[in-house]
Structure formats: structure tokens, C-alpha cells
Image (cartoon, rainbow, N blue to C red; front, top):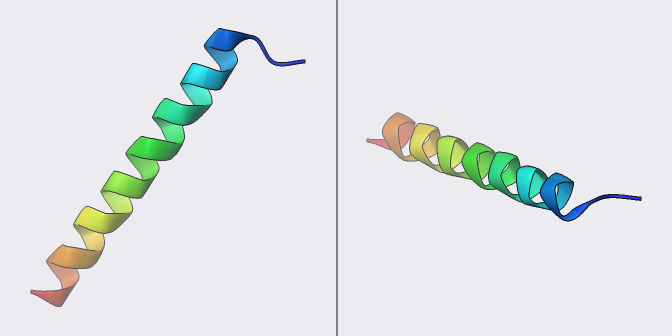
Length: 30
């Protein structure tokens, strides 16, 4: 069972990964 902190960390890590993917994608297209 996940605690609130685990859920927050999962969200932060996922969000950061999506942001870095988006940044990398937009950079490669330019």
C-alpha cells in the first residue's frame, strides 16, 4: 500500500519524465 508521500514522488517523477521527453522532442524537431 502506497503512502501519500509515495504517490507524490511517483507524480513528481512521472511529471519530470514527461517534461524532459517533451523538451527533448521539441528540441529534435527544431
